[in-house]
Length: 80
Image (cartoon, rainbow, N blue to C red; front, side):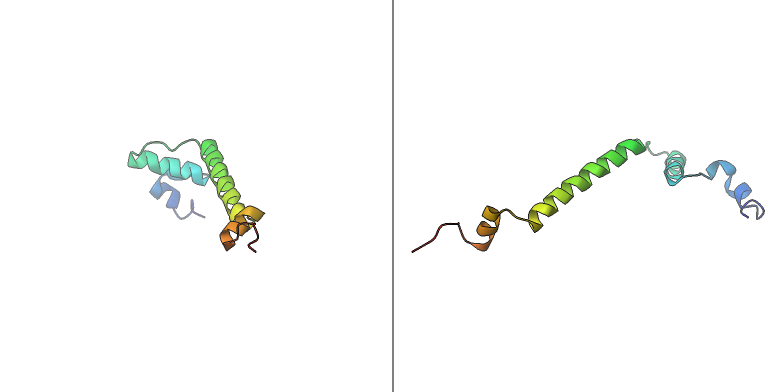
């Protein structure tokens, strides 16, 4: 459909990419921007960041008994 309409010829067939990452690479090239880190590296970085945030969130939503006592103002000792 894009070919029949002449769209591919108008934008240039070399500017049509099969994957979003390739399209972003092509846009960086056209704009004279530096290449992005490798897609695999970016994925690993994202996995690490998400894992870190999940660990942090789990600590907030499931505090240990000592953390829960500290947060509620109790120290775990009884005052008589």
